Amino acid sequence: MDMEQYNYHLPNELIAQTPLKDRTSSKLLLLQKGTNKISHDVFSNIGNYVKKGDCIVLNNSRVIPVRLFGSKTDTNAKIEMLLLHEIDNNVWEALVKPARKVKKGTEIMFGEGQLVATCIEEKDEGARLLQLSFDGILLEVLEELGEMPLPPYIKEQLTDQERYQTVYAKEEGSAAAPTAGLHFTTELLSHLEQLGVQIVYITLHVGLGTFRPVTAEHIEEHQMHAEYYSLSKEAAQTLNEVKANNGRIIAVGTTSTRVLETVAKANNGLFKASNGWTDIYIYPPYEFTAIDGLITNFHLPKSTLLLLISAFAGKDAIFNAYEEAIKREYRFFSFGDAMFILPDKKA
Image (cartoon, rainbow, N blue to C red; front, side, top):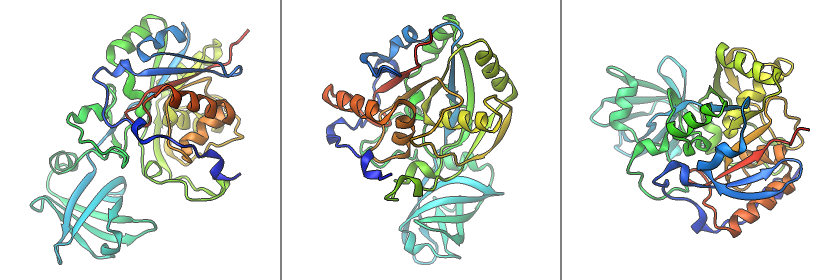
């Protein structure tokens, strides 16, 4: 399949540059799976489209300030570094710019020397393995020296760093936010629980794949980068109970979807406590095992995220919904509006 089939034109002014003041006030496009009927609402009314016995699955990964600006210790050349994930004890995979200046053995200093990164391996497309040396706790050093790694299409400065975190973010480790969850507040989650909806938290640390466009001409040739996930015994038990009682599993975001599908595929449709690395790549045609509904944002053209939702709802239905969203001036991407692909109506 040709990747160009998943391209579309988006006017620049529809790329959301800043988060809305009220997280729940974003627009909500509703796409009914099966009939492909489209309707419109606001996110604060999401409770009208779920019911008692449903389960909403959220990714509780927390973004760490992993974008750093430093200089080479020998030439003082400026280097930008984006830490992606820890491979070994204080050995991290990272993206560096300009990559041509970072060879094996290169030392980069950050701040007044609170953090030093030494390149121990050169990888493709600007990736490097770096040995980090620092005093104390790395997270505290990053809090002092680092910035939030906002996507390149966001040009505005983010004044409140917490707006690039979900309100339930807990497990430190992401290089980007699981943005479908940005629309929820603690009050809205409490309201959903009062309706009899189960809330389950899983973890997937968003890594390299988020920053890499699909460069392969043919969809099948793209290689996903592995990301670390974790699903607890309690979460697995709740998910299995929901399935057994004919409840609907609604994933919030493509990251939650990928964890649920990874685990369910490995366990004949059931959920089991597990953790590890997943490089699951979901594109049409793909038969979903785990989820019934999906709450998601609007995704970049020719992205793996657009492929995933097209596999779930059908390419024509998704592109029709995107056309409608553009016409109605929905806000796109990380700080943008939301879409709820509603489960097939069961008899």
